[in-house]
Length: 130
Image (cartoon, rainbow, N blue to C red; front, side, top):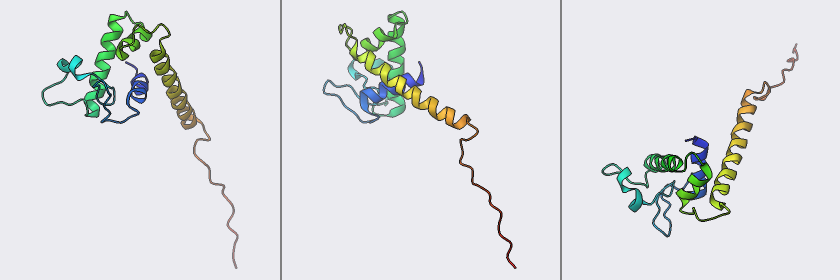
């Protein structure tokens, strides 16, 4: 799974709040339903732990991609529990967020790769004092 896709899911699902809880019981950064995905948790793990939430959310989305034969929009709709939405609003929202993350990431990469990336301090001759 593309890390920027998971970042987009996290942004939309929890606004990067690791202790996010939904009104329907979803938890953590990736808003996974513990009742549905309890089998993915090791003993003592919590979906409120960022690493756990990201791992489990990624596993769930990867499984849904397989179920949907690689159709990312349908996998995202399934992740959100909104397969019945003909307008696929959730998937469109996630993909819009991912494009924005890609734009920001590419802009930073381009800036870092530019020969003018770091400001150059103009050198001046120091006047000789007598």
